[in-house]
Image (cartoon, rainbow, N blue to C red):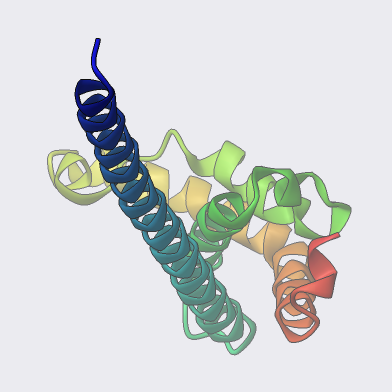
Length: 155
């Protein structure tokens, strides 16, 4: 092989390596950009969840929402933030209300019930609400404190 051929092959190899390096760098930057975007989206979603949690807990504490509905919404929002949060003693009332009322019909399924069945379910729901009102309101206060101390309160 002549020197000229070797130099041409070397130049082609260098151009190929440089081209692949530029392509790899471009891909790396895109991955980094997407990762940062995903982190920003996660942060925005977490903040929205926290804001919604504060609104629901505040409405619950002020009596603007039924105990059952407020407990369900708080439970779902806490689980979205971190499923382990429902293990905290301060928030367990939400889970208990959910567990005791999850068999009740809602929306169109409730509309399909007879008025007698609806009345029976309302009585069951109201009994749970009367019994759990104070623990749920205490949990709502704990949620508001949790929100005030965020992000330290996560741990």
